[in-house]
Structures are given as C-alpha cells and as structure tokens.
Image 1 (cartoon, rainbow, N blue to C red):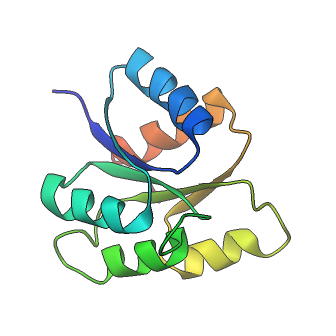
Image 2 (cartoon, rainbow, N blue to C red):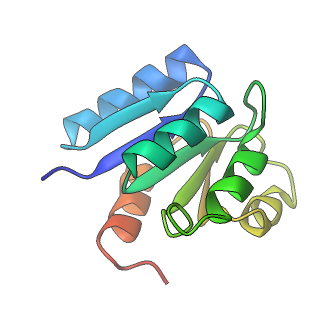
Length: 125
C-alpha cells in the first residue's frame, strides 16, 4: 500500500510539481490550499506524512503545525516545512513550532525524496 502524503500549499505551480514527483515515486497525494482545510484533511484522513507550506492563507503553516501536534490523533504525523522563507533562524523557528524537518524552495527532488524515505521508513532520528 502506498504511503499517503498531505501537501498543504496555496501555490498551484508548487503543488503541481510536488504532486508529479510524489506520484512518480508511488505516493498517494492529498492536497489542501490553506491551513484550515489541511487540518481537516489531516484529522479525517490521517496521512503518513505532511508537507507544510509556511505562508498560507487563513492560518499559516506554523499555526497549523502547532494545532496538529497538539492532538494525539495527529501529533505523531511527521510534518516537513516546505517554504521559500530561507532566512537565518527560520529552520529553528519551524522546528520549535513542531515541524519535524525543513526543506527550502525551490525544492530539490533528491532532498525531498531523501526526507520522505527518512520519515516514512522509520529512520528518523
């Protein structure tokens, strides 16, 4: 059975690119355009991993991650921040909010697949 990944992203081009990469590697992809819709999908679908954009309409990715991590039903789902916010200190800020890892945009396919393998195959430290 394919791993299910929820991608919460409001940019169509980014969603299309990541969807193509994930589907080409056998992942099932769920998508949400904003933080609140992403939370609803996460609570109802229980994906294996969440790719979280940080700059989202409504609630941002940091708040969405905090809410996900606050509940036992979703608290153990790995959340990887995918964001163009690549300023000094951002990684630490995202990890402090509950993200398990961080990947700067534009994404590298190899880095993305490496992180997915790390978290979905029980090798995360």
